[in-house]
Length: 108
Image: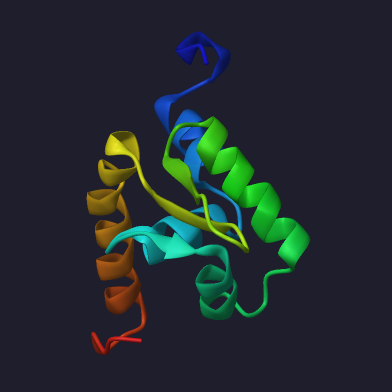
């Protein structure tokens, strides 16, 4: 990915973590690896097709890694890469801002 393809750094950042679901998936992976089914339960409004698409995009962009265990049935876990870990402070800042925006600082 070339930086000069984007009009500003924010455009690149939003390409990587923007949209309805990417940041939410990254948020749920911030404390450790999760299986696809757990992610689906934590994001009940996402379709299986969209979850699969988002996971593939995040994997392609090297923010998450996919680990397949040699079991029957196969078990798949997703976790943050080093680059994905570097997004955690950004997500934390967005969460902090949302508490301020919500008014009284209550946690969701």
